[in-house]
Length: 370
Image (cartoon, rainbow, N blue to C red):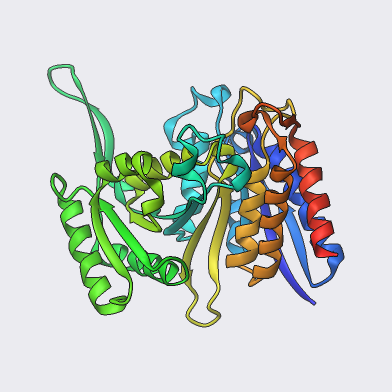
């Protein structure tokens, strides 16, 4: 029996509660017997700062490097607002992405049929929505140097964030997007700001070249990032795969998420380059939502995004597509039964908490797998 090593990093806030529901899914799969998941748990974010004085320790980073996949909860909260910038909770996630080389962030925006009326957009705009946003994750303005706040001679302060991209960084993320499109609707929108940003000019040129040499069979459309944001509200179903840089990807994926009804619904995968010898990729899976400190510890959080993130791990890291499909069907089935956490509550539905939603999904999964 194949054994896979999982590192669980619950982090802060509701991350602790939602990861607990994933552990129940893992236990079920272990008992099913096809593979075994050996799990270890580490600290990240504010939880790591409280113990180690950093957002993630070297020891837990070593565990992440050795794991077959990392399952991440959430980080941050007002408790750590005053800590030094270099060790803020979010620095733990950024280090994981950078040190593991997780350059490709896959963020699906899927509207489950039962939630079409939960979106802030009209049903006809979101029913059947299935978008994949491919966000470059280790370059751009989040990592470019210099990044600083300096005091000028006149006493004013000046802040600088630097947007940097190289040809190779754009080429590799474009190839990921084209590969995904071939398995989906065969269409890619490349979003940048070539009209005002030099990095946008390069992005446009490189994606065009990769399309010509690597994926001429895939339909490619270029779109300005601000127009893409508008179109996601006006007509989101026109999109299949959107590939974009780190900053725009952050913004556009959150916007697309809300079209589905709630940030609490959507998973993500962050993948590294394939190992030349084994073909395996470093990978981290996390919900799109944050730590939600206002409801943390109250048993109110929606665990679906974290559970679905583990589903993406089954699909992309462990070649367990059949099990991932069952988990997706279990989530859809529970929603069709009318169960809702507070963030997606609708009139006439049954409101449940974190554990109740997790139990319902597990029970549905057990039924489907029987």
